[in-house]
Image (tube, rainbow, N blue to C red; front, side, top):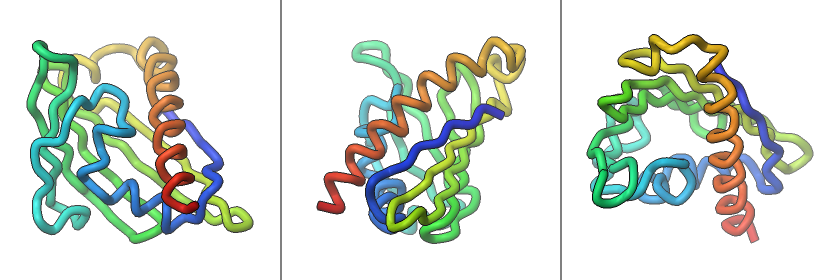
Length: 145
């Protein structure tokens, strides 16, 4: 499982306000190009965001589903981007003197990406998730001001 961490200069609730607002998903997730729908009930387990990945005109419509959610502490998602596959993504937040220490973990669980050795996938996911956390931090820090 690939792991990245970031110290967001915003309180944990402000970070979770972005994480759990499905309509902001494409603004911070690298590769997501648009959100088509957010199911009523998101971010409760079993509910999904309907999004597209890629760049026009090569867009893939797919979903991200909540598996587990503990407000202001933990969010686990199943992210889909077929034909590349499915992944499990976790966000774990802890308070650090009023800021948010955020850990993001990702692992390919189905499809072609799951068959690629971790030693090859890990560096690519680390780069992608570094930028994802940077974008999320910018939104949360702006939200908290």
